[in-house]
Amino acid sequence: MFITCRLHFSSTEDTQYFLSMNYYNQDGIVIETGFEKFSGRINLIHSLGDKLKVGINLNNSLEKEQTVPLGLGVNMTAGVVSTALQLPPTMPVFNDDGSYAMSLQDLSNSVAQAKTIDNDGKIKRLFGNTYVTYNFLDNWNAKINLGYNQRDVQRDIFWNTLTQRGLLVGGRASKDFDENADYLFEFTTEYKPTFGGSQELTILGGYSFQRFTSAGFNASGQDFPTTSFRTNNLGAGDPAMNNIGSYRGENTLLSGFGRLNYNYRDKYLLTATFRADGSSRFGEDSKYGYFPSGAVAWRISNESFYPDNGLFNIFSDLKLRTSFGISGNQEIGNGRSLVLLGTGPIAVLDGLEFQSIDPAQLANPDLRWETTESLDVGLDFGLHNDRITGSIDYFVNNTRDLLLALPIPTTSGFSTSLQNVGDTRNSGIEFTVSSNNLVGDFNWTTDINVATLQNKGDKPG
Image (tube, rainbow, N blue to C red):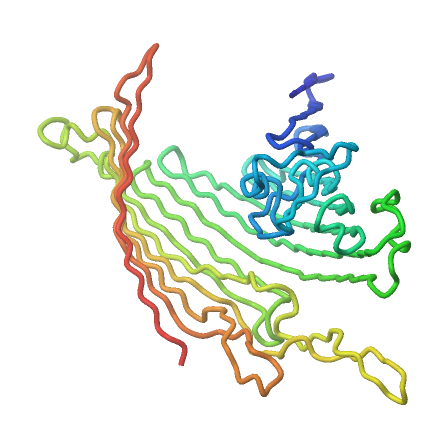
């Protein structure tokens, strides 16, 4: 079932509103599974005169999912589908007294798993942004944008003693909570000087700051005196079997960037960008990376000397282009350049047990950005008034300072260490073509893509 309600109205010429609400509910193919979602959205734009404009975009959703064990495990870890395939077809679902039948093969009853094992998730989302734009001049404006994104996940899992996996541990219940949020502050300004109708120039500059946070808590218990509590009283289990854990993480990313676009008579096109990014994930002296890029293009078909007849007449568009740029990768997790502490083994002193604390990873203060240099040379074309379009590209990507976990001697207390090592190179040729074979009441289009790829890597020294 899917229900949508949208309201869109404008009270004045200076104010626009948009409101929508959605409800979605679908049962799964396997019994006791399903997905339900409520969502809402509101957009507001208001102009304060000719120069100032403010806007708000807000989205909210609640998702509920009900699942069952579906894993392809063996014995008691096998899920609903796997046990349905492995159990004897003559085995009944219920015994004569109405209880679930137990298998002699150490497999859980498929229906019992679906009916009595809970695996329920709840996901709450809240994300949106608010912004202010101001026009200093007709061709010069500035914008401040504030964004927020939050995602909270709660999962409850309960194994009843009516299944093999639950019976072995006297019932098991667990709760997991995960919270993730990111914050954005962004300032941009754009200037478009006027040169007449033959030239267009756009200059953009800006700054952004992003902060990402994550936190979580999990707890579990087993061997319950009754299964009536389900996941609502974890403390009722055997205290010796209780498990508890929590975590928290944070990282920040700040950037300064600029971009220039130039267009002369739609024949000569130029784009140049530069950005500097700083990430808290890298070493103290290597947090910043600098990433320039540029592209030029020549639309040959717009030149005055381009023939109106002959062979080239079939080419309605012909453009030659090339680009080069450097990009960075910082997806390594938080705190990888630092010494992180965690829980170690239990120490016994004078007959008393103490929880020890020891390093969880080796520090690498020299950890830095992984960078990729990309070069592309291409030709875009259109045939017969763009009835057929396509492109041919030759590309080369060189990646340096790869972020890899290298094996190290276990005498250090660890088995791997994250380091910047090795280079890779991949290159190839790509050809794409699209055609509108039939246009009208009946449409027929064709897309073809052919590519070659060659990879080469240098082993870490």
